[in-house]
Image (tube, rainbow over the protein chains, first blue to last red):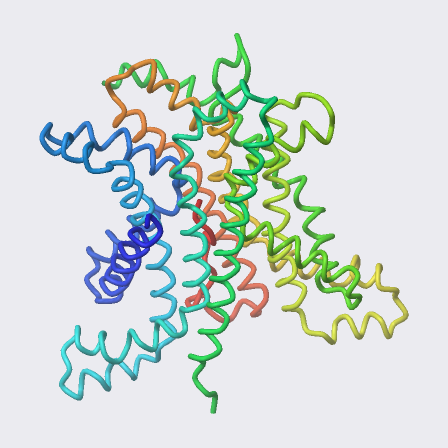
Length: 205
Length: 245
């Protein structure tokens, strides 16, 4: 759930940012570059803290209480993770965009497609194909990072665990299960990525 | 607002150092250096195993690398939190636990970088060295690794950056690094989480961004040397930060 929400946010934002970045407006380009640098150079945990604890204090009371009753942790965690990973997806798509020859763009424009249309129908499909391997990689990383969302709850958990060290059997089981779950899904995603990459490969001339 | 931060900045940067344990940013950096430094030889060993022609070495090392890459760092921290004391048979400080975890985690990731570096070299290099009569060990030590490691330098720096970011996980097991210090400052102040955590992000940003720039400079220099100084480094495809944490 958390993975899906933050993945959608990250991908949509990432592709948009990458498009803005190549659109040619220098000010917008600078903004996107700054955003990407900020998101990439601050640990995910710091982002999570800022969103969990920092941002809610800025919101008006009514919004705060609404969020608190509607599973606010999940909302803020998906926003934090989504925004952070959007920077990575943006870089992936951008490197894909750079791999598309400039002539493609010119050809699309000279056929009468607008900038957005040529992006949508001509450039992005090709770019995403080249960007797929890092894309999958970052999806795996995003999935693994959702485990950080439990870090806030987990901080108290370690205290509890220390007290019940003689009950380690149970904690071991819980952690084993969670670990196996993460491992299976991550490896599955990696495998899926390899399959998709093979199927999408354009035949080389 | 700024008086508060000038008051708390020392605790974010060095913890209670002169009067107590070292903490904050200083500990974060120590952790990263230790983690990466100890992981480095391990990662070379892993990479050599993975490129080895013998299945006895190749298969276990591949399994290890994929296992570690498939598990989130938090999970790994928990495992070493429970397992390491059991294995050693005594209590282990949270600091040691975190260092061990980082070493294991980074060794797996770095071994992939090293492997890529080794495989990126033309096969002729190894063949030429072998035909000159060098053994496998000397071929690796004197011909392959020096070239591979030099080419990998930018990736290694970005790995260092992600290690710096990963030390923030130490918060979970109460290692007094930067994130933990910030949360302590936050609970001391109570009413200003936004400012505290914005400062936290800012400190991380300053540290990591300067390292990123550093990696880019090194990358450009290496590219220039490899292409013989004539070609411009316009198409610089190196992604300075490979992973998010």
